[in-house]
Image 1 (spheres, rainbow, N blue to C red):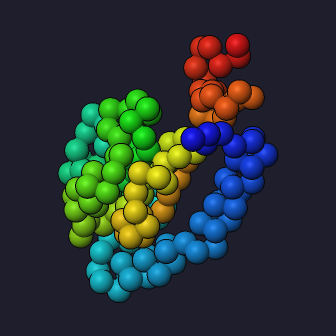
Image 2 (spheres, rainbow, N blue to C red):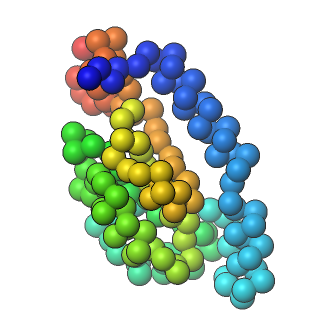
Image 3 (tube, rainbow, N blue to C red):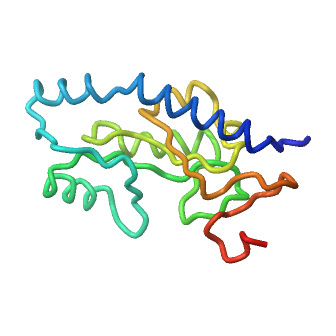
Length: 155
């Protein structure tokens, strides 16, 4: 099965996803609910916090100290992606979501490559607050992965 997509289609999908996220953000209602519930009032949000080499408790402490609400993310996608923590199926995702349940954080993932959606059911993905990605890995002319900041990317 050939999963290669053109760069134009990739960029088009990324732009569409960004627009959808911007206009359907849960932030406004979540922040208002936090103020009504007596939770700390946050002065900013950092949506890209990984727990690599740390713990959720330490991240929550840092969040309070700095007055920023954190969005905790883990890398998500197929096993071909190499990260210290990688969510690759619904079971992995449910464990991750259970760890964050009831905590004053947004629950997100950092999507890896173009096939990440095939790893998860829609029902499991619907439990996330957001999905982010970056342009570090993209399809090359031959359809293979190109890692933009890797030493061999220019070749």
